[in-house]
Image (cartoon, rainbow, N blue to C red; front, side, top):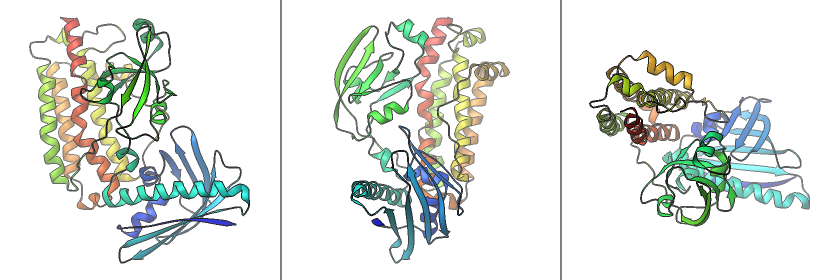
Length: 398
């Protein structure tokens, strides 16, 4: 057998490094997009990446805080191979040595070198995750400056777009790449960097894989029946400065949510109950339906926190929310505009109290706490992103 070795020293407790190879949530924080594992000899070891690349196998040996060994058999490998991870506590933290063993023949030499390249890259991300909480896959990912929307057959007909596969834009952010390239609301992206964009959101992620902020790529989109091609300079991604202190985090988030709620309340000044509940069309949300959606999102945010802190995140192939029956039910059970707005404020307060009540040790798992803090500090943006939609629904109702 030939062995390809990757090694790195990380300033973190050895237990966190061991967990990074044996917990499903921890694995997705630095290595893959979805994982499901059973950390015992013979237990499953399944990893999946956007774009349908996956590796399946099982654990071969486990020695807590010292050794993790597993079978590796990806969707493109000709045969299974073996990976061993050895952990050693040092004065500088923990030394992680990963050995990937492959058959000793010329046909496997290139594959072994590719394994090493990918493991080197991934271990650098593990170091960043455990030391700073920053996922380099996100930090280095470029931003387009778009607000993605759904794209149905009915929308294609209404917009006059001659395709049914693509990504419809709910809007573009000023001073960012898409806006500067001329893209606007209801344009339908069909290609980025010469890679197709479909109704599957992961196609967008795959299209910008390998490029960074500052790069310029070709973009194709439809505006009505006309197809356009432009060059877009991708924006660099600003990373949220998350304080690793629950009190400070809540103090930063509270005024942001308060301001967003003020903007939301202002939309309903002088609006009648009937106007707030009137749908512009049967399949479109009323102003209060949109608030129901915001309320669902706030509840889902706390569920996400549960998953992060519990170490067992849920996963699915797509987003299953915005079910009309759920939207209608939430709107109906809150009998007045004020009742709905009060419920939104209570939901915000519950989220803030959730974080305020976390024990100090919650901040020690930097990767999970960074994701929690990042989501909390950006939760006001979701409210702002729907303000114009609410105003449009009310204008139609009036």
